[in-house]
Image 1 (cartoon, one colour):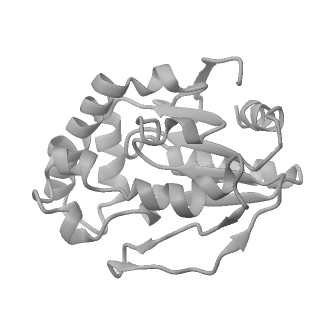
Image 2 (tube, rainbow, N blue to C red; image 1 turned 180 degrees about the vertical axis):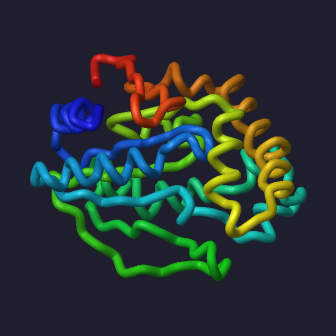
Length: 218
């Protein structure tokens, strides 16, 4: 699968850096896929810019102004899409100067970040993972759109394993059932992200993912 996705990236025109979205629900496997894809591309000699939506969050007070478990807040008030486009996606896109920053926010300290500006090579690849990446504000900023699909109950099971050192099981369960899953259900109903994806990865069994292409791009 990684070879196929890397091949799809390699077949894209290179007039400017290629921007790849790895979308999907929380705990679907997006970060793992993005990290592994980045490694494959680097082994093939491509310059890779690795970034994540987690570094483009609004401050905590804004994210949680409706409460930590609000699905509405999760979808509408969590991510700073204007900053994401301004400092990363648009500079790497058509007509951009390729001078970018890969982050604007540090979640650990709840403070803004101002990393130095970096210049990407024209042949670079941005591998960007996160939730809600195919919503209308962002969908036209990607040259390749990958959606990682996993049953919602499986994401809860994975979250209970992944986050048990930081949160109680009750808090994890509530956060997924009240905030993350309803916000994803809204996203699926209003945006239909799988229909916008070039590649859909079915990741219920990570050792044996199943994938399908949805567009000539892939």
